[in-house]
Length: 276
Image (cartoon, rainbow, N blue to C red; front, top):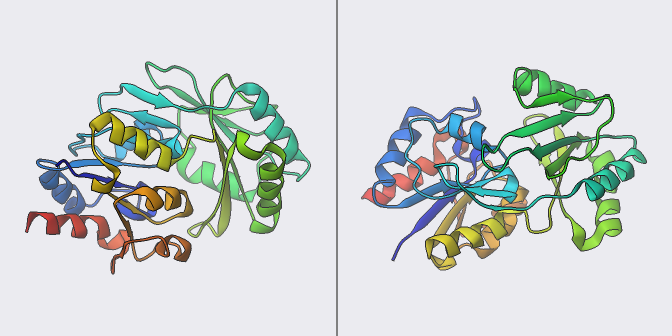
């Protein structure tokens, strides 16, 4: 029976330098010769392929926290987006908390081109992230008024927990099952991310879709992660594996907790045992 292995990228498979180490790349390509390997990430298709350059991908990719499922050949399998009306309503509710988000939209289902809209005024955390990682990203578009597009992949707030937790609670109460709300710490930036998605646009639903697509039972899946956006996926996978730097809340859901961190090639060291 086929076995499927899916790993988160940031803080799980990627080194903190946001690169795949030579060891991880070598092990991945060895295992991909006889196992199905893929990723489940908050990243876009193009950025994910950039990270995984030189690596053999033989299963669909879970992208944008689960909002998109795409084959390595760029065929769109499934997409879950928020329409403009609900996106604009979410943004309006956030303004009562004196904060505005990034809005990431899908522009074309063939090219998978995206636009990363920036609010006119950004807080310290937002400005740091853009200047550090997205300054020359062609998707970036500064706006005089932040609003939704026809197909919003996700809405992302950044800030301190004391601001974002009340906002998250408010949005969950106000919109109920119309959206998926994920609040999680970003330890490397000492802040929190609040991500708003389509209610079926998470990694767990995407994993189920991929298993149906590949005809692989969920019991024959192994997933790796570090953060709260991996939690639902951990609950349904056959085997769930947390890296040593994972959040304690995720470790509580894990079948296995590795003794290694992302900076110690944790996922690759586990995969390497599959060849023994």
